Length: 100
Image (cartoon, rainbow, N blue to C red; front, side, top):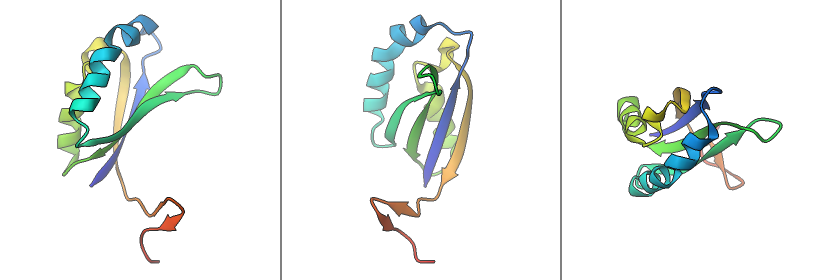
């Protein structure tokens, strides 16, 4: 199953947290690339950081949550919240993936 993981940043957390922990976070993403298929930051309309998003291949939400909690950014206070949603991909690369 594919899951969209949406992270909302804590507005009270300083940019130094992200800078300080980014090398470990990127290494974590690489080490878990068999499950984390895509990842990247989200910004608001002014370009300021708003959070992040992962696309995760996993058997269930509990597995995804465990993965999130192992991320070096998780215990830092940077993340205000996380939302884990099951994603049913029906269109990609200009093609319908399922018949209607």
